[in-house]
Every structure is written in C-alpha cells, then in structure tokens.
Length: 227
Image (tube, rainbow, N blue to C red):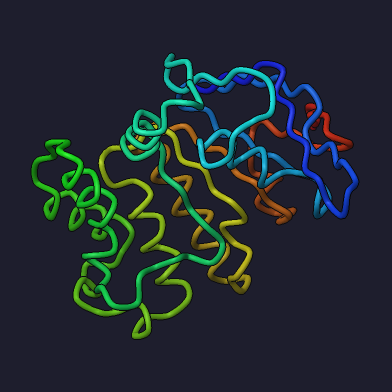
C-alpha cells in the first residue's frame, strides 16, 4: 500500500541545514497497522506529511497503492490525496461554520467541484457518523459537541470516500484518558471492519503498545522496534 525508497528531507533554519530524514526506506502492506515514534522534533510529522503527499521529499521515491508519486504533477497529487488518503489530526480542523455532517462530507464535495463523480455523498457520511456513534449529532456544529465527539467526527471525515490509507498524527494528543481509550478502541474496530491501512504517529505509550508493528525515528533514520 505504501513504499518509501531512500527518502531525504532537509530544512534550513537560521542559515543552518537540519537533516530531518536521512535515507528512509519503508514498506507498509495493505491492511497493516504501524506506528512511527520518536522524540519531539525528530521528524515524525514530516515523514507522515511526505507519505500523505502534503510535503515533498528532497530526494527519493514514494508509491501509494502501487502508483509512483510524481511530485511535479500537482493536480494528480491532489486527486490521489483526496481519493486514497484520509487524515486524522490532533487538532481536528473541523470547519466551525459547517455542521458535523457537512464537515464529514466536505472532502468529497471538494472533489466533486473538480469534476470527480462521486455518488451518495450524504449517505456515505451518515453511515460513517453512525459507525462512530454520532448519528445524533449530524446537525450540530463543532462548538456544540465535546472534544471526544470532535475526535470521532474527524475519524469519520478521514474515512469518507472509502479511503484505504489512514494517516493519524497524535490522534489521542488532545484527549483525556477516558476518551483516548475510546478513540483507540474505535480505530481498531473500524480497521477490522473496513480493512484500511493505518499509520499512526504517537507519543502515547499505551496506544503504541497496542500496535503490532512499530518504528522509531532517530537522527533521521527509521528503526524497527522489537517487542
């Protein structure tokens, strides 16, 4: 589902080169769950953003669902990202002027405006909101629901359109312990049901210990964590 080959990324800060990723190789099969762990500032989110085609590597190759990514074809990148990749962010990024149903529908609405034909958008969104336990919150706005409910809405939005690759950046980072457990259980149950590939960046030890395949990013290198 995902393959990275010899990925490098360097940033310039105050005239100094910071080598964030130094020759990353990674393969993730369809239906796998993996974690990417490491210290703050180690480049975990940068790596996740490259996988999600939000950021571009300085060097190296990336494949998503057997498609080799050409970083110079922006329109194609937007389409691949919108149709194949779902994002779960720590800070949710729900649009305050749209209700929860509309927020979940939004990624598919955007693709329709680009002439991609998508059927039954509202039906898909309602079914996913029912799966995450929010069928009673369809017409509420983000300001009217709890943090745990916003996290669940974000999960539904990531999955709309039958996405097969889900990238989660600190999905429990803004939640208390009780809601963290609920989101972890929800993700696991949905993954079993829908069989998507799940890549999680996390500092949460309890979440990490549930993940069957774990990696640590250190000094720009990715190392397998042996349990």
